[in-house]
Length: 481
Image 1 (tube, rainbow, N blue to C red):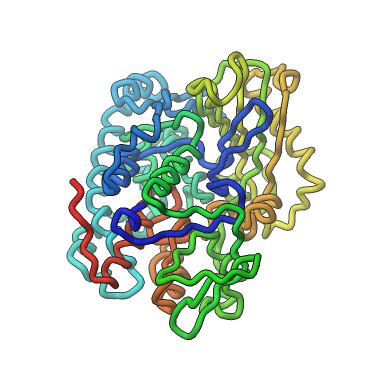
Image 2: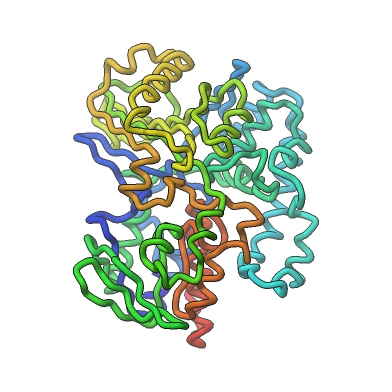
């Protein structure tokens, strides 16, 4: 969108016959599901993208607030249902965790300051020492929570272990443990509590459909069912992109949005400056066991429900590090039908159950484990939520395991959030930096790119990449405001 708005000719090549990959829509009969992301936060970044392209977001997309943000069920028996409305969140906080109102405001105030200091840093890739000596970096250092994990950072504000979980469990969106992820990522829960969460009518994939509409209106080309078989190179640049049908696509610039590690092994192969051993030795996120259910009943559930295990730290460690299936696990249930009547027939539900599980480094035989694990998940949901007749109302059902994430979606090791976002694997430690330095006309966007894995920051990674192109071409973007 950004390139076309500045007069560039753009072609997009997608191997599937539909857009979005892990962010696409799954349709089962009369029921529709978000395959991957289940909510949008920081909608102003999406609004800004459309404004930069001389468009109004709401001409293309209808966003509905998710209210409450989610309902959390803790092993202690407590529940907590925060809101995008701060007044409602305070009331709920005083009900569930009395005495923490001032702590909440301290958390929000300090993280508002943190995000203000961090935002200018998104302009730099930090793949060289000069970026670390910039004034914006030096000013931000006191706010970066250096040397602290997210649990440490959150403990400065909350002593109750359940309340700490309410401000750290969001790291499962990145496939990581809050006991390992850097404290700087407290801006993720802050963003949810500050900006709220939203559901596009028709599902999260409608965001991509809105982008596709804008691209086609400006004569951009989207080629579906066009699988890229190989990226061809010389010593310093990409010379072409070979499709599965043998056609060679030549261009001035190439943007890589495929799963990064998959692309290194399968699209670049021996031409990759990133060694296979480097890819293998990186640490990867967890995966997810997904159950999609079309139900002939509208159950009494919020749009998002999170069920916590007895010991979340043990579950996170077993999932991310030990790579074994936990006996007691966390469960995230999405029930968009309560917000959006287009997702299922009236009176029915299209719910999605997500359980964080190890990536395919685990060696788990999902052909063997899928059915018994599904039964354990059903039992946990029925017991903790009292949905005793859940299975009686199933009309359609589909399961996606880490095996399918790897084989059907080309996600390396089934790690749906890619390489973990640790400090060691960012900046110069991110192999994407080495790739872009080697090939001057190749830029990486998406989950492996500079800025992170959630949709708002993926949008930011695209802005970062296009600014590099404009700089190389000495192109000054038009002022569109």
